[in-house]
View 1 (cartoon, protein in one colour):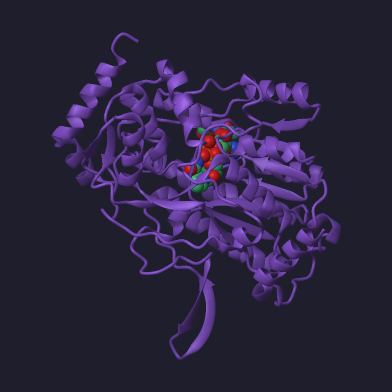
View 2 (view 1 turned 180 degrees about the horizontal axis):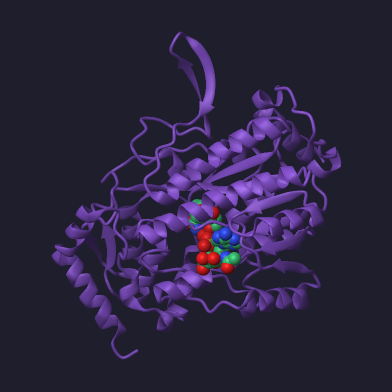
Length: 448
Ligand SMILES: NC(=O)c1ccc[n+]([C@@H]2O[C@H](COP(=O)([O-])OP(=O)(O)OC[C@H]3O[C@@H](n4cnc5c(N)ncnc54)[C@H](O)[C@@H]3O)[C@@H](O)[C@H]2O)c1
Ligand SMILES: *[C@@H]1O[C@H](CO)[C@@H](O)[C@H](O)[C@H]1NC(C)=O
């Protein structure tokens, strides 16, 4: 009880600046009992995806009534890229039936495109009247978003329209649902900021000496990251104009595959992406280590990035759901990260564990060769979040997964397949090391 009170008090303190503002009329405040916890009706948009599925079962396990909304676009993109999750994943219907069989708990599934099927989305929200809506339903790979004009346009249309549809549908349905959106650390940019990155807002002195609290300047590094910056402006507007309660989670790179719950049965297995477009850096390195081919580090490997384990993603989202901002407050923003690491240090860590060496390729991405990254995650820490670090025992889980399913891997798919611009594409094409990586990947695939 003391902990609950403490949590609430801290939550209030953190939200104080926005909470002091006037409330817009029209939208009813959520009952206090709902805010303090208890069973909620929750929509999980994008609940078939890598983060969405473990989160959906985590929330269901906690006793919430969960409905997954997903049009399975990610599975279509697998087909487009000629690649697949390394782990064999069951269809949503099979996953949900297995969950019911194992736990007696029901998860609903609605096949719906958030960006394109507005009327169905609005009806669903009117019908279900959810307390919270977790929004994962976006195209989430930066490399895919830079692949070509088709992918650039799809990423903008899908992500920005989807987020806007959700906001306007919530208002139109007179629903006071709290929206919990997954954003990215990439909205801040990966230049050297010269100090700790705060959580979403910065206090500034405007010309003329006026004090103000503004969104941290957006400095995206890809079309994908740009859509998350545009989402942030939509949230700011709908919070101010309509009193929509929004939490935007600036998440680091998620690693790991399964949580305790998705490990319960093979039919609940989560997806694992290892390809050059969707596979994040740790996944790609561990995949290469399992195949015994060199890890391909882009540039000098001096990029510093933020990381979080998939189990921590689920826990942070639960914390965010239980601590909505006050109505009329500016969007709540948390940095959802456990730690920061330099890419070449990750390669070294894996090298030490596996004996597989690193190979440095020309960088397919337009980005700073080296950067520092110092990020605050004090808000989640204050609410009880205890991060899992990369060298904890869970590291082995990913190694087990890559070993177990390595026969399903297409080694050449691990290499970069999208380039930020023509110059970067030419540099990679001219790179002899890159040629060597293609050859060893191809050799690893021989006889499969
Ligand atoms: N994976 C990471 O490392 C990471 C890091 C930071 C932020 N995020 C964010 O978290 C969210 C989820 O990421 P993920 O890794 O689970 O991605 P994912 O691609 O595995 O999952 C996204 C899901 O949303 C669905 N979807 C996409 N557009 C849709 C639409 N218009 N209508 C309905 N469903 C749609 C897809 O089918 C997919 O199942 C994304 O918004 C992403 O930007 C992810
Ligand atoms: C859902 O997914 C894909 C991506 O494969 C998208 O292009 C498609 O138009 C979607 N929506 C509908 C309504 O079919």
